[in-house]
Image 1: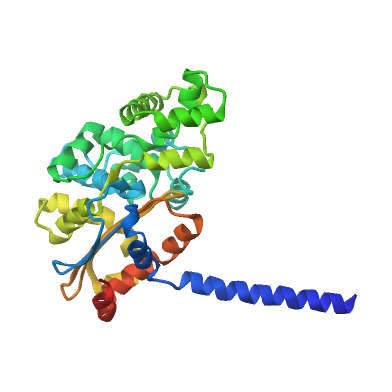
Image 2 (image 1 turned 120 degrees about the vertical axis):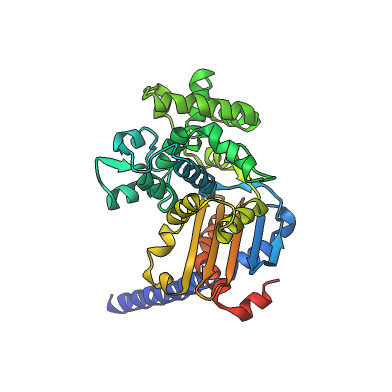
Length: 358
């Protein structure tokens, strides 16, 4: 018995050591996103652009529109800042937290909203705090609230002002999670396969129409039976993810260039944009030592990982990075997410690496 226990413990020890070694290699692979983008270039489901001091170091599928996930929130930040600068809204306006909870669906945002509330729990929030919660914490509830507050039409109008060539219409993405339940009850569909087929064949115009109807129900605090039937099955999540607002890497590179260049927006609007997008970057005090200005926004679903950033370091080097990907496997998604910050840091700080990128 003692001999068996010793052998068993030895096997467990070897397995644990092997797992730790594998995990270390898994976590320490900053080039994984670059390799993946080059490998999948022909599949048109990944894009990567890196620009340093007005020179493109690499450009892969720059004009392919892909689902943006939470990176689309950059557009809301810009429209929010425009309205603040034009005194259309007051960023110190207080909003009861119940107004945000109207748009909250538990277990659908990776605890983003809960984390924001845990760190900032109060009965009322200013519009600025809500915007930071949307951008830095990626709260979808805050996003849906702000989309309604500043106006869906106004958010989409800014796409034209920014001259984005490949961007799709921005609609309420929290509300769209309810569409399968809404359709199931409205059309009395009982079979899962039939419902999946209905969702897959629905036109985008119809999809957006239902998202708006549901958004109005949530805004007006209308408790409907379909709201208890949120479909989070893998197949429904894939449909939801694929139908998210989309844009291209070139679209978001142009936005990052505008913000980094500080010439496209008036000073009040520029300051507002920078304050919100730099929040997550400047949480780390070390970044303030070598970055003069910078900001970022990322996003993800089970199948998507996206990232857009701008940086100007203390000696004036300007860098913009945009990465968009779709159809990721669970393993690839995990590897890219775990290593992307290292990848971005390597681009910003390693000249020999930058020379090898293309």
